[in-house]
Length: 431
Ligand code: URA
Image: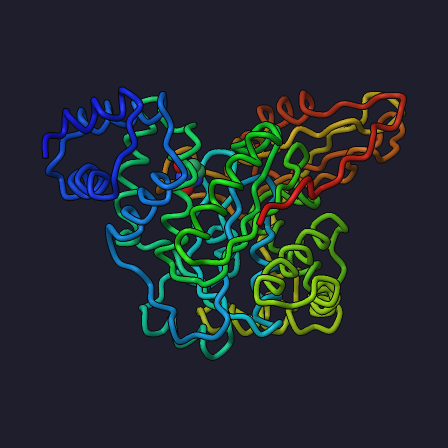
């Protein structure tokens, strides 16, 4: 096959067959098709789009480009994915809830990049905890306690990693079929029967508008359905950070509060809703599923799963019961309300960038991070404040990045005389 013919076909608005996508994508992954040809093809896709069938075929080709996890004989497998936000510690709470509910989570998670955090980094706030498990142990642990979580293997959907790196430098990242296929290729290759997607929408998210978020959610659900999986998506607000904490250790502490039934309402509600989506994908009645999910946070069963999971992956389980053990950076600074009134907004992107400036995140893959720094949002939009009252607390280490963080946080805080209209956290669902 002639690669320029395939580029011309997409340039002129044609629809690729699965075999053509294999030629392009697998050829590129093997190093047989050069960057410049795939760059041109990606731009043609960016400009012309892809049909739902083409998008699903591209996803399957990418999913099949490397190792595929076989979770076949594990009971009721479920995976979860968030498109990334600020203060999003949902996986830390939801995954033990799911295993307490009798589902199996054998999951790959990522590290944080730029202003968004990653589950692996957060868990590494617990000394000894490791994301590196051999496949046998990963599967055995999933069978025994219903929860295992590892870093994403380089051999999983390698086509996606290569294509993403090229998209990043050719202006072709923000293209719906390419985003949807990128995310779903990793989910399909990870093997779970049911996938719950949390598509974040707003200032701190990849998708800025509800319409864009819905489009991405529909595309991902469609891919999953065509591939024979159960996929549910919820669209959730990411104008404001989720919960109160952003930063690695701080988020684990908030997740532990939530697992004890003492978490913030928005975070608790989101975890219950996502767990209910997973149960309903397995045929449970929705109201009953919500009640059962909420119960795992009240009766200690999700916390017990989390403790067992931490210990199984080498972490010190005493951290789960003694929050004082976590390394939280000792420096404190406060951002206060400039006037009396109501908090109108707390810019999630500003909070994410502040954590990055403090050293809690990384600009480039592989950089070390400080797990102890972060930001606590004490007052959320709609809360009343007095002039001079603390709205945001910063946890810094020796002042590193503090001035930059302060500037970002002050710029992202607005206080006004009237209470703003209440914004629901869950904006829509797609299944
Ligand atoms: N996340 C991914 O994994 N891929 C994309 O293309 C965008 C976000």
